[in-house]
Image (tube, rainbow, N blue to C red; front, side, top):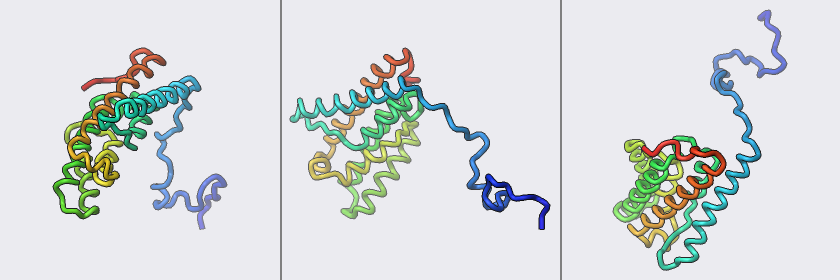
Length: 192
């Protein structure tokens, strides 16, 4: 028996080594909640970015532009966390383009086994983004979409790179405009 009394706010045996992994680290503190103005600016930026992309697709149907799911994840980074390293232009453009190249290559040149194509596309996209310093988490989805997308997408082949590039550039342009309206010089943090 120990002389310690159980803490009422803790898990029984909280000092046991197995619980060390589940306790929050001391350095992890809850961040400040964003101001309502910042939330509104992020909402407006994301609305404008995705809206501009949808409008461009509808206005120019012959250009074979696309709104792909990974652009939604990019919007989260660009408008809710514009100073994050993954949100910077090099990561946004490079991550999407590298991933699109990898996805198309996996779909076209690997055996027609989805397990092989899908897993290779995402894993290779991650590795190449890491190697080139262009990690953009939505890039993994861009690679996967090139493999598992509908026929209208996978049938594009190498043309898939064009709508990916146009979409990423348009989102970046809207992010530059909207983020700097809220706070001058806030985006991009760096161009490298």
